[in-house]
Length: 313
Ligand code: AMP
Ligand code: MN
Ligand code: MN
Ligand code: MN
Image (cartoon, rainbow, N blue to C red; front, side, top):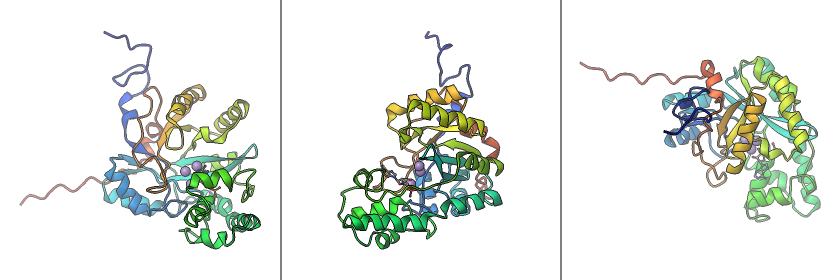
């Protein structure tokens, strides 16, 4: 019989309840309220159809879709956690912090997100001016056609316009040639501070989670600084299995979660059909030795009401 005492096991072991890591939780995706292409209701239906058992909508810098997402989830019998993805400036780079299980009506959080969104309109005009300088005209108006929420114009909307108008063949080409550091259409922007973002989430009753850490291209020292400062501010989780990571990066951040004592999250980062390569709910399970964020958020999960029992006459 194999000795499983020194390694994590799905069947039991010295760590946590191993079964809970097997939950099909998808705790990261975007709707039309930020830069996704589907409504909260369409996302809920898609999550449910794909077998998701616990869902969170995490629009960028915006909680305007939370009540709709929760209502749509509950109508389908799907458990829900409130969510948001906050843009943060850390070491002159943009880092994303996901918040889960907070009160979406918390005034400090709502005001903080409003301030974080605030500069997007002016930034978009500057992006368009830079693109015009390299011969791409009308990009602001073009991007606006894809915007679902006037307060939330994002580089994604520019990317869709540049693909649609034939400048690039897909959005990854857009982000390789435009909108990113060193390329036309890159406008540095100051987002929330790490400390503020974590505090807004925590003081609204939620948990802060580092989103897709492999995406930041930090040096090991910078990454260490991110994880340790995040912890010091009271951050508690990190995305380990995410549609924004390559599978080879999962074990790297599983080890980081353990090193820093962080709970692990799982989410597709789905933005829309045909645009995101990972669909809602279509991710590998979290490695069994980790503490899933949903274990610590047990008391914050908004459970779907039980389906009414069929009446007998
Ligand atoms: P913004 O918040 O306006 O800076 O836009 C950031 C968004 O752009 C991200 O949330 C992604 O949806 C998208 N994005 C950033 N980099 C890439 C990339 N390399 N490929 C595809 N989408 C990207
Ligand atoms: Mn996005
Ligand atoms: Mn992100
Ligand atoms: Mn995202």
